[in-house]
Image 1 (cartoon, rainbow, N blue to C red):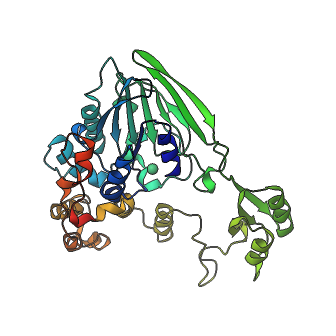
Image 2 (cartoon, rainbow, N blue to C red):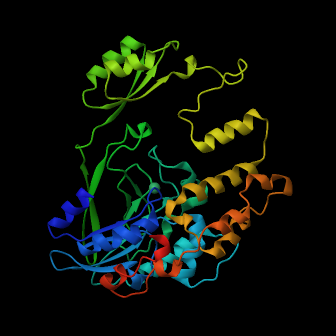
Image 3 (cartoon, protein in one colour):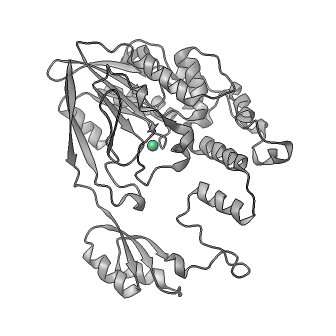
Length: 389
Ligand SMILES: [Mn+2]
């Protein structure tokens, strides 16, 4: 937030969109109107072009800049967003890729030859390399989109979601800036950068990475207690993940944390952990395994080989972690829950929450969360329906 305000304080236009880790409805209901008063443009959920989905801004040098902004769209929410943006009746078959492509097309329609045209989105593109800290359920193949969805009329496509800085081939310059801070230890090798993009009407944009050196780095140190303490002391300010290569004993973790106050995680090397099923009651540690991996390992342990179960689990996990704000689902949404997992035979239905649960969620004025007002001020004030506050 301080970064956004600092950027704005010099008179820059600032546009920010929600990712899958954000509470998208909270951003719309609370942060959008408040930051709007300060001149920052924030989008929690996807909006129609005339309701804030496509912004026409004036740069400090007086140029016109069009920004088509598409916040993260979960597969479940894509059905409802399609209704609002594309006036399309909800279908039971969810064609995520087609819907996102149509939304990008709609949002980029106002692009013009005398302006700088920018499209921004929180998406997974085919061929993109993972950074390590992404939530894998929202980065699986179900979410992958072709780069061709960004039009040649765009000077630049600014993407979030994959945490590694990278360029993707397409009809315009397409970049992930990557996460500015390492989010977890899977990303300690990433060099965080900010991308400074220079664009003028009619000229291809130039992209320059600028290293971000302000944050504290993450380091993994591995070895015996003496070795990790020596390495940890040499790591300076870095936050540490300590992997001990020696047998477990009582108080070992406390010893490490005592010597290395920057240690965030202390764990035993795989070779020194109790193995699953080796002795009654002993189970392999769950630490470091994602929910998808854990479920996959569980199925493997039980000798269950049924890809439908993994698909159903992914679907459920996606719903739960997609966006906390989505819990405020309208009544009609109950129908999309069972529809999303149609392949399950009756015996497996127990893995799916009963439809009644979805119906118990109070209906929220979904249409009201995406106001049709043409200007920001009007949109910001009445946008929050009481049910979502
Ligand atoms: Mn993301």
